[in-house]
Length: 324
Picture 1 (tube, helix red, strand yellow):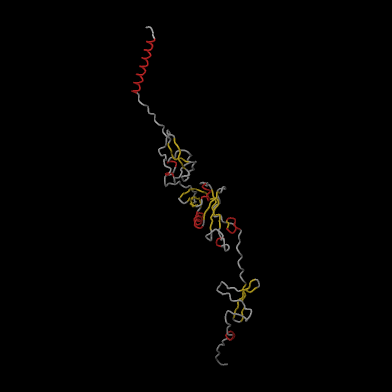
Picture 2: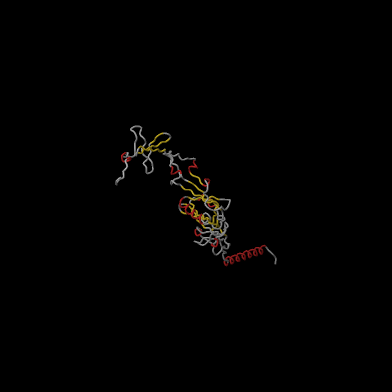
């Protein structure tokens, strides 16, 4: 067959029609492919920094972090931050990993204390966080224990009218050196925070510590030298400091008690008081009123009227009976 322009046009038209019919049927029977959206990453509670065993969890220790969609979570994975507050870490917890219930003690449960034989675990409540170096003291370390007390109920000198002696009696003493810390916790309340430090003490030290908490404020300092020798440490003046010593104050010297002389004239008695060679008026503090000083005129002054001389000199003669 001879190819002519007309024949070529017809073949091209037939090919185009075939392609159109094929596209029509393919479009008619085709199904739309729906692409599933990517699964977003989950947000789980995690430790912000590494948590040491025995730490009481607060909102400062934990936060939320992303977990991959394909990550496998443990059955006891924790999903709520609030449920972790107040729990105690059972083991060392790394940062930025999903938290599990097995990492913490059960609610209301606490780690057991490791105490040497014959020793006692004594909890101490510290109101001021700086007293324990803001939580940097850890179990197993050693601390020195101090008590501060104010005898006058205040700790400042009066701004007017001179210094109040009662407010100058504040004192800080070193109770113990090298006491071992066996537990540490921080409690956060609406009004602030207080910390409880448990020390390992013997029976005598425990009694001293309980009384000291009632009579003064307790503070701790880190002792890098380790365990102390035990017992109360108040042995010398170097183990205590007073407000007067701190401010370089001294007590005013007390008035010298006058010298007393007594003069007797017959049955009368006169008391006189002398200080630095001068006669002074003075009222004694004992049962004796102290008498009154001698007068410069008018003769002797006595505490009692003189007795009748006849009564003093006359003797009762015994009755004599019989004959010579």
